[in-house]
Length: 423
Length: 92
Image (cartoon, rainbow over all chains, first blue to last red; front, side, top):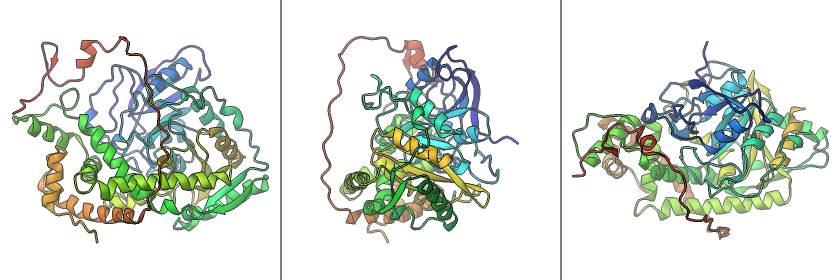
């Protein structure tokens, strides 16, 4: 039975030679591919065909990779289940009655099911790590500024990064190596991390590595998840790593801060979808504002409307200081907390998701409950740090992910630690 | 409960600002959900003020003419065009 991992299946051949020659890569459908439909999982872009490639796609081609299609996703990257796609939900290959996680659920499912060797996703608040955890594969959210966002359809641009999903830590690091590095077309990219050799760090050597475990990211997690996480941690200790508890009081406000900032940025970024340069044709006879409002009512799904409206509200006169300004304070507080914790540890470890994969349809009616599932992943995006999700084992036959968070541009250390989890 | 209860009129007002033409069923549903979500966001009230380090630099490049999209490429996805221009609804 089909998993509906792809929205568009299309073969884009890369160069003959390069580090990814002979390998297939699935690309999330919010990453522009010249001449190949890029929908963002939205009816708004159902017919949109970009006239150019995203920088990461250019780099894939130059590395010899063959792109095998564009993967399903929560509409505009807004979701934790890949059920809000206008093209229907993707199923989790491990258990088809369950969601693959989101929003890069199609990319994770394609890799887990062997429909692609590797995949690219994007991670705004956990959208690579969540589906990696739910599907039992590896996913890396790079440091903000390591990978170019040129050609990524923006949702919340101060938070999101493109990153790899793969069956193993080493292959995820190989893909990261290909796409990482400065880009003159994205002024938020940095020189740091250019030409770094990430794959060679996957040597499984954690002798003497210090791992901080934030207590706040364990409390409240499903017992089965915690048990699997603790077993994996004990295994790392047996390999020579040292663990200690750390406290990050600010993470208690991370979900609120994340959603206020992401929704505010979404309300601004998605203003461009007005049905003039791209978008569905409508029958409106009204003036500009009426026609604009009708296109957006028809083209956007519920979750996208919800976030645009809440973002508009959070930025509106009278509420800006209460929501947006306070969320920025929380972001600064989080960065300080992470700096302190990472001064005492090489990496931080937590369960990637506090829950096991949801049943399909289970979570659609209660948006707030869905937002709470992102508690362990969003702090990383707010602090602009790198993190990896690596399979830690199974609970009740379902995958559990272990998240390792590193210092800025210290991808090599999280790759090294994650490769020891695999061992 | 949120200090800022959301009534359907407020949802309509925000939808108007965001240019999204909601139907009545959506207005009622969002009003209930927004009350819930905004009440959760109220927890931000107790966040301490933290001095954010200003680690920002301008990144500039020379202002040079370079190749861009052709007119045909730029117009390719527009639902309506005329004489090489985008065609939109009347402004008033």
